[in-house]
Length: 201
Image (cartoon, rainbow, N blue to C red; front, side):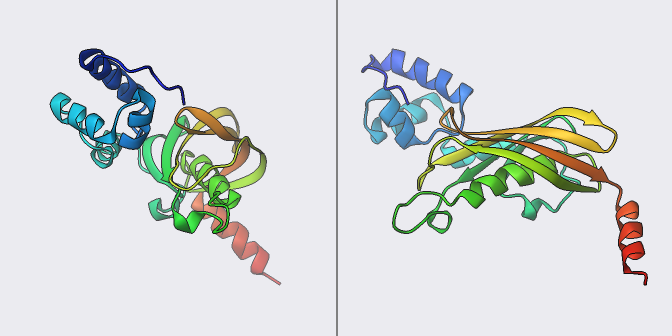
Protein backbone atom coordinates (compact mmCIF):
# COMPACT_ATOMS: atom_id res chain seq x y z
CA UNK A 1 0.00 0.00 0.00
CA UNK A 2 1.52 3.35 -1.00
CA UNK A 3 2.23 5.66 1.95
CA UNK A 4 1.33 9.30 1.44
CA UNK A 5 3.75 11.92 2.74
CA UNK A 6 2.39 13.87 5.71
CA UNK A 7 -0.25 16.32 4.55
CA UNK A 8 -1.82 19.40 6.06
CA UNK A 9 -5.00 18.53 7.96
CA UNK A 10 -7.38 19.92 5.32
CA UNK A 11 -5.58 18.10 2.47
CA UNK A 12 -5.43 14.88 4.50
CA UNK A 13 -9.16 14.97 5.19
CA UNK A 14 -9.92 15.60 1.51
CA UNK A 15 -7.78 12.60 0.54
CA UNK A 16 -9.37 10.54 3.33
CA UNK A 17 -12.85 11.13 1.87
CA UNK A 18 -11.63 10.18 -1.62
CA UNK A 19 -9.90 7.03 -0.32
CA UNK A 20 -13.01 5.78 1.51
CA UNK A 21 -15.23 6.51 -1.49
CA UNK A 22 -12.99 4.25 -3.56
CA UNK A 23 -12.61 1.58 -0.84
CA UNK A 24 -15.04 1.87 2.10
CA UNK A 25 -13.54 -1.26 3.72
CA UNK A 26 -10.18 0.21 4.77
CA UNK A 27 -9.62 0.04 8.53
CA UNK A 28 -8.42 2.92 10.71
CA UNK A 29 -5.10 1.06 10.98
CA UNK A 30 -4.81 0.88 7.17
CA UNK A 31 -5.64 4.57 6.85
CA UNK A 32 -3.16 5.57 9.56
CA UNK A 33 -0.42 3.71 7.71
CA UNK A 34 -1.47 5.15 4.36
CA UNK A 35 -1.45 8.76 5.61
CA UNK A 36 1.55 8.32 7.92
CA UNK A 37 -0.35 9.51 11.02
CA UNK A 38 -1.62 7.90 14.24
CA UNK A 39 -4.80 5.84 14.44
CA UNK A 40 -6.18 8.45 16.86
CA UNK A 41 -5.67 11.17 14.22
CA UNK A 42 -7.67 9.13 11.69
CA UNK A 43 -10.46 8.60 14.21
CA UNK A 44 -10.60 12.32 14.95
CA UNK A 45 -10.67 13.08 11.22
CA UNK A 46 -13.57 10.65 10.76
CA UNK A 47 -15.48 12.23 13.65
CA UNK A 48 -15.01 15.73 12.22
CA UNK A 49 -16.07 14.59 8.75
CA UNK A 50 -18.99 12.49 9.99
CA UNK A 51 -17.54 9.28 8.51
CA UNK A 52 -18.74 6.19 10.44
CA UNK A 53 -16.43 3.42 11.66
CA UNK A 54 -15.71 0.40 9.47
CA UNK A 55 -18.50 -1.81 10.88
CA UNK A 56 -21.10 0.86 10.13
CA UNK A 57 -19.69 1.48 6.65
CA UNK A 58 -19.97 -2.21 5.79
CA UNK A 59 -23.50 -2.33 7.21
CA UNK A 60 -24.46 0.75 5.19
CA UNK A 61 -23.20 -0.80 1.95
CA UNK A 62 -24.94 -4.09 2.75
CA UNK A 63 -28.28 -2.36 3.37
CA UNK A 64 -28.36 -0.84 -0.11
CA UNK A 65 -30.92 -2.44 -2.39
CA UNK A 66 -29.63 -5.59 -4.07
CA UNK A 67 -30.94 -8.97 -5.16
CA UNK A 68 -31.36 -11.89 -2.77
CA UNK A 69 -29.34 -15.08 -3.06
CA UNK A 70 -31.38 -17.86 -4.69
CA UNK A 71 -28.99 -20.74 -5.34
CA UNK A 72 -27.93 -21.40 -1.73
CA UNK A 73 -28.67 -20.28 1.81
CA UNK A 74 -27.18 -16.91 2.73
CA UNK A 75 -25.47 -18.61 5.69
CA UNK A 76 -23.70 -20.92 3.21
CA UNK A 77 -21.91 -18.01 1.55
CA UNK A 78 -18.37 -17.65 2.88
CA UNK A 79 -17.93 -13.96 3.67
CA UNK A 80 -20.49 -11.16 3.88
CA UNK A 81 -22.26 -10.28 0.63
CA UNK A 82 -22.43 -6.51 0.20
CA UNK A 83 -23.58 -6.34 -3.44
CA UNK A 84 -25.53 -8.80 -5.55
CA UNK A 85 -26.97 -8.43 -9.04
CA UNK A 86 -28.09 -11.88 -10.12
CA UNK A 87 -26.49 -13.19 -13.31
CA UNK A 88 -24.29 -10.09 -13.42
CA UNK A 89 -21.97 -9.48 -10.47
CA UNK A 90 -21.53 -9.85 -6.71
CA UNK A 91 -19.12 -8.66 -4.02
CA UNK A 92 -18.34 -10.19 -0.63
CA UNK A 93 -15.99 -9.30 2.23
CA UNK A 94 -14.16 -11.77 4.48
CA UNK A 95 -11.91 -10.76 7.36
CA UNK A 96 -9.18 -13.30 8.05
CA UNK A 97 -9.37 -14.33 11.72
CA UNK A 98 -7.55 -16.83 13.95
CA UNK A 99 -9.73 -19.74 12.78
CA UNK A 100 -8.75 -19.08 9.13
CA UNK A 101 -4.96 -19.22 9.52
CA UNK A 102 -2.16 -21.69 10.18
CA UNK A 103 -1.08 -21.24 13.81
CA UNK A 104 2.65 -21.17 13.14
CA UNK A 105 2.75 -18.80 10.15
CA UNK A 106 -0.48 -16.77 10.64
CA UNK A 107 -1.09 -17.24 6.90
CA UNK A 108 -4.64 -17.91 5.71
CA UNK A 109 -5.49 -21.47 4.72
CA UNK A 110 -6.09 -21.56 0.97
CA UNK A 111 -9.41 -23.37 1.15
CA UNK A 112 -11.03 -20.38 2.88
CA UNK A 113 -9.91 -18.03 0.11
CA UNK A 114 -11.17 -20.50 -2.50
CA UNK A 115 -14.44 -21.06 -0.63
CA UNK A 116 -15.20 -17.34 -0.54
CA UNK A 117 -14.70 -17.09 -4.31
CA UNK A 118 -16.54 -20.33 -5.12
CA UNK A 119 -19.58 -19.57 -2.95
CA UNK A 120 -19.78 -16.09 -4.49
CA UNK A 121 -19.67 -17.57 -8.02
CA UNK A 122 -22.60 -19.82 -7.07
CA UNK A 123 -24.49 -17.07 -5.21
CA UNK A 124 -24.48 -14.77 -8.25
CA UNK A 125 -26.48 -17.32 -10.26
CA UNK A 126 -30.17 -16.61 -10.86
CA UNK A 127 -31.19 -20.23 -10.34
CA UNK A 128 -32.73 -22.53 -7.74
CA UNK A 129 -29.60 -24.69 -7.81
CA UNK A 130 -26.11 -23.89 -9.12
CA UNK A 131 -23.23 -26.35 -9.22
CA UNK A 132 -19.55 -25.72 -9.88
CA UNK A 133 -18.24 -27.91 -12.71
CA UNK A 134 -14.62 -26.72 -13.06
CA UNK A 135 -12.38 -24.03 -11.62
CA UNK A 136 -9.10 -22.52 -12.81
CA UNK A 137 -7.49 -20.80 -9.83
CA UNK A 138 -4.39 -18.78 -9.06
CA UNK A 139 -3.05 -17.79 -5.65
CA UNK A 140 -1.04 -14.60 -6.19
CA UNK A 141 0.34 -13.96 -2.70
CA UNK A 142 -0.17 -15.22 0.88
CA UNK A 143 -2.97 -13.63 2.89
CA UNK A 144 -2.29 -12.95 6.57
CA UNK A 145 -4.22 -12.70 9.80
CA UNK A 146 -6.25 -9.49 10.05
CA UNK A 147 -6.37 -8.79 6.32
CA UNK A 148 -9.74 -8.17 4.70
CA UNK A 149 -10.55 -10.02 1.48
CA UNK A 150 -12.83 -8.24 -0.98
CA UNK A 151 -13.98 -10.69 -3.67
CA UNK A 152 -15.81 -9.60 -6.81
CA UNK A 153 -17.55 -12.09 -9.09
CA UNK A 154 -18.51 -11.13 -12.64
CA UNK A 155 -20.56 -13.35 -14.97
CA UNK A 156 -18.54 -13.35 -18.18
CA UNK A 157 -20.67 -15.54 -20.46
CA UNK A 158 -23.86 -17.60 -20.53
CA UNK A 159 -24.63 -20.52 -22.83
CA UNK A 160 -27.83 -22.32 -21.96
CA UNK A 161 -27.48 -23.59 -18.39
CA UNK A 162 -23.70 -23.04 -18.32
CA UNK A 163 -22.07 -19.82 -17.10
CA UNK A 164 -18.47 -18.67 -16.79
CA UNK A 165 -17.84 -16.58 -13.69
CA UNK A 166 -14.62 -14.67 -13.08
CA UNK A 167 -13.72 -13.91 -9.46
CA UNK A 168 -10.94 -11.59 -8.34
CA UNK A 169 -10.07 -11.24 -4.66
CA UNK A 170 -8.14 -8.23 -3.40
CA UNK A 171 -6.64 -6.92 -0.16
CA UNK A 172 -6.52 -3.11 -0.04
CA UNK A 173 -6.83 -3.02 -3.83
CA UNK A 174 -4.02 -5.55 -4.39
CA UNK A 175 -5.02 -8.81 -6.17
CA UNK A 176 -4.27 -11.89 -4.07
CA UNK A 177 -6.38 -14.57 -5.79
CA UNK A 178 -8.18 -15.07 -9.11
CA UNK A 179 -10.43 -17.83 -10.41
CA UNK A 180 -12.61 -18.68 -13.39
CA UNK A 181 -15.52 -21.03 -12.62
CA UNK A 182 -17.81 -22.98 -14.93
CA UNK A 183 -21.14 -23.05 -13.13
CA UNK A 184 -24.27 -24.95 -14.18
CA UNK A 185 -27.73 -23.67 -13.33
CA UNK A 186 -30.56 -26.10 -12.66
CA UNK A 187 -34.19 -25.83 -11.61
CA UNK A 188 -34.96 -27.52 -8.29
CA UNK A 189 -37.59 -29.75 -9.93
CA UNK A 190 -35.04 -31.01 -12.47
CA UNK A 191 -32.55 -31.78 -9.70
CA UNK A 192 -35.19 -33.82 -7.84
CA UNK A 193 -36.07 -35.72 -11.03
CA UNK A 194 -32.40 -36.52 -11.61
CA UNK A 195 -31.93 -37.69 -8.02
CA UNK A 196 -35.02 -39.91 -8.17
CA UNK A 197 -33.88 -41.43 -11.46
CA UNK A 198 -30.50 -42.29 -9.95
CA UNK A 199 -32.15 -44.00 -6.99
CA UNK A 200 -34.28 -46.30 -9.14
CA UNK A 201 -32.88 -49.84 -9.49
